[in-house]
Image (cartoon, rainbow, N blue to C red; front, side, top):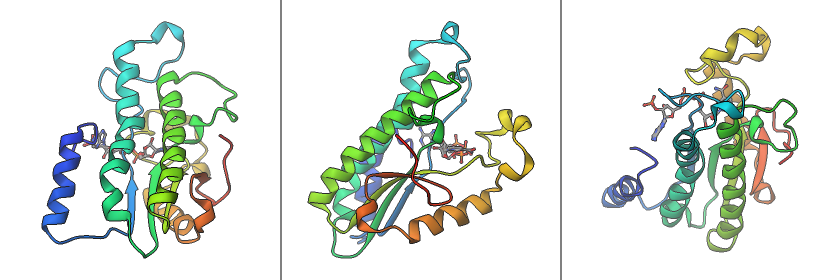
Amino acid sequence: MDVTDEDQIVRVVSHLQAEKIGKLHLVINCVGILHQGKVQPEKSLRDINSDNLLHYFQVNSIASLFLAKHLLPLLRHQERSIFAVLSAKVGSIGDNALGGWYGYRASKAALNMFMKNVALEYQRKAPENIVVLLHPGTTATNLSQPFQKNVPAEKLFSVERTVDQLLKVIENLQLEDSGQFFSWDGTRLPW
Ligand SMILES: NC(=O)c1ccc[n+]([C@@H]2O[C@H](COP(=O)([O-])OP(=O)(O)OC[C@H]3O[C@@H](n4cnc5c(N)ncnc54)[C@H](OP(=O)(O)O)[C@@H]3O)[C@@H](O)[C@H]2O)c1
């Protein structure tokens, strides 16, 4: 589905319910864009473009809110459930020492705020659920491909390694971790 289209999310959730899937235990939203066609990360203010900024926010920030809105009935049950969303360390305001990538950075910072809010609402409505934001580390995917040449080999993770590391972080989560922002090694990241 296109996660920016709320109707498509509603249809997928209805389909799950029609298939008698009443409970979900682990949801990981891995959708995100850094570059897509004409949308390219901005090097400076010269590159700022309203349509591109809106697109970053639609895909990287708002889509997770739609998912949170419509998945709540499936995540609200008596067993442990996780709603994890892939964020990015460059979305940390406290950690930003380089600048650039306006849309990507700001859309991930907005995602972090959105999910913190969701965590607080879910604590009341789905108390066994844990909502977290995860930074996967630089991983060899289509998203990082144009930027890999400056990354030392040991800091560029394979997809398999990243999946393994993030699943370990998820496995170790406690209820009090809900609403937090974790790196691939399980350490907390600054907002
Ligand atoms: N790779 C890294 O180094 C890195 C670092 C930090 C954070 N992250 C974050 O990790 C997450 C995963 O990134 P990745 O590296 O796996 O990137 P990726 O290989 O480019 O995968 C992103 C996925 O998102 C999908 N997508 C894009 N727009 C969508 C939409 N509107 N609806 C549904 N799906 C959509 C893409 O589908 P199509 O292929 O069909 O377009 C693609 O499968 C992202 O949130 C990214 O910001 C990645």
